[in-house]
Image 1 (cartoon, rainbow, N blue to C red):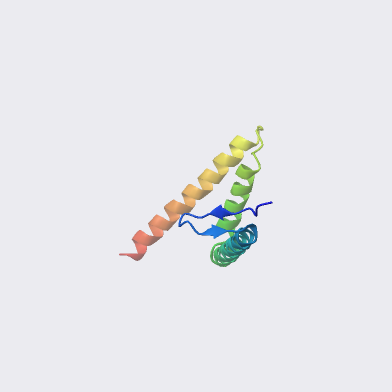
Image 2: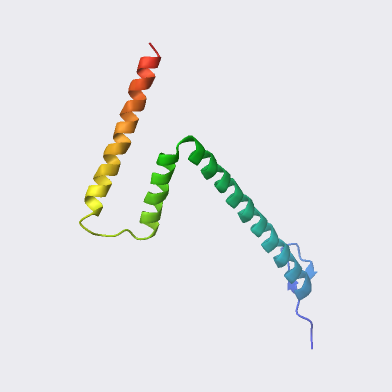
Length: 103
């Protein structure tokens, strides 16, 4: 029986053990990158929660609602409208404060 071999782009033959080792190394590298990204996201959310907790909580709730498929009900429309009003009021307040501070 012949051993299974593959040829890479450069023409060097590699056996199944070498291919498995390369796949394992790639998978470990990928997992490290995902873990690092998870830590960065966690740090960012923690920082945002400390600086603007209500905004961050609202964004998390909205994201969870969207990812969860939403809930088509009579309550959805008024909730979205109330959230939009709150966000708009905050934006207008920020603009007014900046214009007053710049004078």
